[in-house]
Amino acid sequence: MNTPAMPDGDRRRHRAPARSRRNLLSPIAAAAAVLILVTGAAVALSQGGFSSIFAANASGGADCPEPTRLVIVADTSIHPALANVAADFDANSDVCVVTEIRPQESGDTAALLASNALPGVHAWIPDSSLWVTRMNTTAEALGRAKPSVEVMEPVATSPVVFAAPASRSAEFAGGEVGWGTILSGSVGAVVPDPEVSSASLAGLASMTSVAPADDARRLPSAMIELGKTIPASTEEAVATASAAALPTVVVMTEADVVAHNASDPDLPLVALYPSDGTTSLDYPFIEIAGKTTTETAERDELLEAFADAARLGGAFYSAEGFRDHRGGGELSATGVLPIATVVPENAKPEMQVAALDQWSSLTRRSRMLVAVDVSGSMLEPAGGGLRRIDVYQRAAGQSLGRYSGESHMGVWVFSTNRGGGQDWEELAPVGPLADAGHREHIAQITASLPQYIRGDTGLYDTVLAGVRHMRETYVPGMVNSMVIITDGKNDDSTTIELEALLEELAALSDPLQPVPVILIGFGPDTDLAAMQQIAAATGGAAYSAYEPGDLDKVFVDAFTQRTCRPNC
Image (cartoon, rainbow, N blue to C red; front, side, top):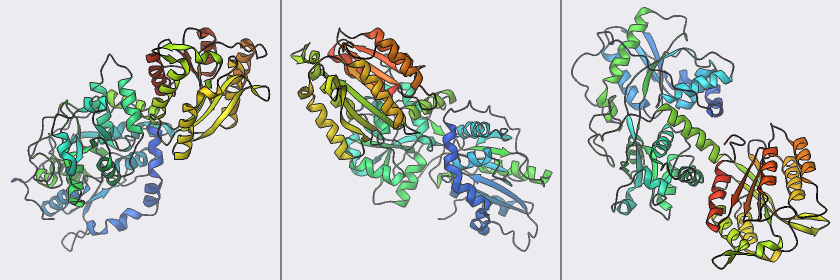
């Protein structure tokens, strides 16, 4: 790649202007996941891996025998541009300096800094200021002090956009596409994991900001749908969008679109700019204090001068698809607009925190035992020419499609005297829905439920047996729960009494391995008071659905709130 010409003027022979310190962002509850990202990076550091990778950047030349060294870790997306900035800076400096730019994913750097495993680094340029919060949260989780850093102005920016396969761009020509369009489901979206992708997290915050206030289910339902397919790479995301039946976009940055089109010109992307606003990744320059024992005033001045040079390196950034540090600049690249779009102020940190917490909750792997009431009353009319069991079958069929392959599900039916003197019967063991055969088996069970209907409602024995089963087979790291669907109250004359059931549930309770019971009562005959006591004893919840249209709504609530019990 030819090195673009830099703007006129020497940027390095003066000190940087006074810097304004940014407030660090509020903590992210899910930041413990960042630790998982860094194992390989920590090993590379402990083995001195970086020194060999960047040897080509570490030679001062014969006229620079003892250079002052600046070591800066940059997010991999912006590393090529910053490497060019550093080479230009070193070549034009009045003093002997070698600036080393190390590429590393922002999440890895945040975790390494938090664990004090990144010595000798003077500055860090992540793709988002929010990584500082995640670094601090990880440090607290490790029992360490927060790293001493100073968050300065960005060096570059890149707005979050919708990337559409160019081969399908005509499908989007009929109207505007925005976050509200994704919420409505009229356009599909692929979202790389927001735990790792700052673009995805910023996108979720934008989607949250336009979610309708009068429909609390719209946002969680959309997140559940997005969470069903979380691609492992940009290539996988693009392939998924290209093959989708519905017009589908990938959430990424403008710079990502440029990088993809340069590396894979046979499958180009077109950037669609959200009609209802977006946000930008800001690439802040962050000084790191206390990492070396040989700090000098000269190094401090050089680092400050490099920060200035980095902010003024617009031509280097535009060559790689980035906008300048103020969000402006012109691009000459396939798939993106030449002139920068107007981007409003970035989503507030609290909104990004809330979006990540909600995403983590909704996409957490589930392990669920569903027990369906098949007592005789399920054949009673529910209106519209449908029986109660018909209404349940319709709602259950729609609900099954909400669960990703990461979820595990099993099905019991219950009434009285199902065989062997018990009130429940296992029709499908708890297993992964990623198994197409298992998912199809559950769909077939749902379709054939009327054939199992007989007897009375053996509710209490079924609850106790189900909780015991889920406790005995508990899988750490998943949401282990039981869902009860019933149209009546317990009327098994030989069953355990409610008071005794509550005592048994209390004895089984373990806050480290919770099994919440979520009860959905359908129709006018349910015993809501008893259901609420059972839910309270297990940290679950109880719902009543009186009309056929209510049943799907409570299914959504029961699923979307399953990880926040009992404080939803």
